[in-house]
Image (cartoon, rainbow, N blue to C red; front, side):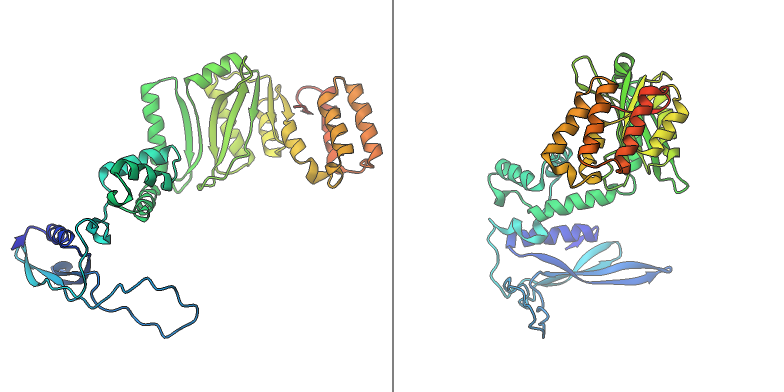
Length: 387
């Protein structure tokens, strides 16, 4: 009996082992030199219960026994290369243990397999954030039970891990190729990117036709937020957001940045401005990041820049703690911020709160008040505090 390749020979022996009811693993492999390079000429496959497990002399924290996995089984097959063919050199088909029944042999390690159909299904579910456990449940229902799937949850996790490793070095390229395809299908799709000296993606911005159309109608006020930067690539997500006539949030484009420095924001705002037809908004709402403020002041000197009240209120308990936890302070403070309709009304409420709770020396509150007053009384080039 001979085979064209060692892979064909291995497949044949594994098919036999599956029918017989035992698991196979590779054993000895031998090479010889051919013109300065190694060439495989012999390979052995043995029963997975071949040999004996190494006995440990340490009894510290012994692990629970999983039963005997090595029983000294002698079953094996050895293939040797003869010219261009692989022939059987040695065959031992006597086992030192009870063989598995055909109904369960497909669950043995060497016979488990994630099929192409299963891989396609797993990829589809993972794109929609379906957990691995849920994927196994669905495949179990489709196959008629967990025992009929043909693979285990560990096999599925190993497949997903290998897929991530395969994509690790080319995912940015795939990301940009996706944008190029969208651009070919729809000329209104806009994207731009930058790479560093190591050809790694550092900056990226994209906006489709719907984003640009939405901005043309509802782009008077733009919210820019860089709160989210928790993905595994350490890139900062920077979406441009607005509100339509139904009070629904709408997207004006999105960017990815390597850092929150002025140069990065300048690059992003320039690309966003170009995508939106070089028409600036009337107002930007952002957090209190100084680099964002500097970039907006440089590129959009006539645009009103306001700080987001949500970010300010979120920092309240940190900046004026423990006073902020007291109901007698928090509720009047919210009434002052959200309920004041005029500058004079705000000043009166603010002054009363600062005096009552002795917060006149709080630097954070003093800075906010100064920014707010500058926004009320100075030109639109200065910052103002408004939700």
